[in-house]
Image (cartoon, rainbow, N blue to C red):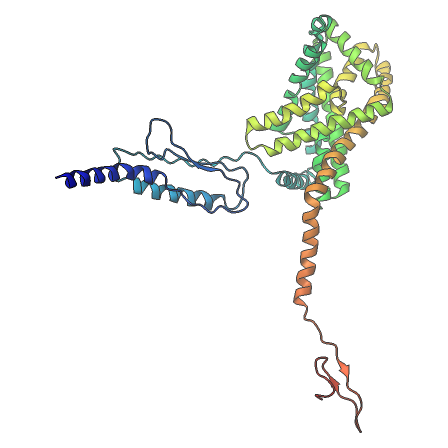
Length: 411
């Protein structure tokens, strides 16, 4: 009787522990080297012996992602079928999450090169129109920033100039977000894009300079049209706004050539990094955050952006000039004192510090390998020729020509 009781306890214990043992089964997956995954089993409190889920977090896209998820899903199904013997004591729910966090830097710049190849073939009229829209979009942000900043003079009087600067700078990136999501041609961002395409041999340098020139003219036309019709003629440029923007324009045009040039480098370095961060994200919120912080940084720091200045400084001259001739004289001073040095700095900041530097770090090695591989394949196909040697003369007759591996004695 006692042995029967012991046997009964053993059977009950084994049946109760079977789901727990099954829950500890490890789903073995052999992921490919290019997949960055984190796989874990977790048991929430209160669900004793249950396999509550399987999580897959995927950091980068790869050609093996579909097969990897399928293999993991098959493993979960096997565990589910094993645990189905005891549904009252163990429940199974499998969850496979495929989350694409961001694109790798090399993928980003490869995509920028492909984008440049498409941009290089854009019609002149379409490019000018898209540039006009980009100039207007940047003017939206500049007008918002100047309106808010002109009403934050009280904070500066209270000794909180830093807070006032942060507030006005934090709202400017709305213009860049509109440009990115709606689509337009901002020449400063294209400094990095078109340079990447030319270095990857996906477009010509002549196409790069054509694209920059047309986009620049479109940006200038859009910014000035916005400032004249929507701000100056609409009556939004009130006395406080005009006084504030006049001080801003005077400070910008009082910079030396080197100061304006160097500040232009910093501005477009950050703007082109914003372009890179936007391309790294796969969701709209991610793109917004990627655009927001670099642009806010350049505004709060005090760097110089040529397209933003196309709105601010001409609008200030519109409020000051009494005639068209006076406006023309002021505008020519704007070109020489601010726009030209800032534009040159923007080219260096975007084309050199982002386009060329990252091409050197990420893309150059791949191009060198592509050049070496065809040459190595050609060498492998070419058969090695054995040099023929002449045997020494012996007796009459002409000497025999023997292969290199044969010796005269064997002949």
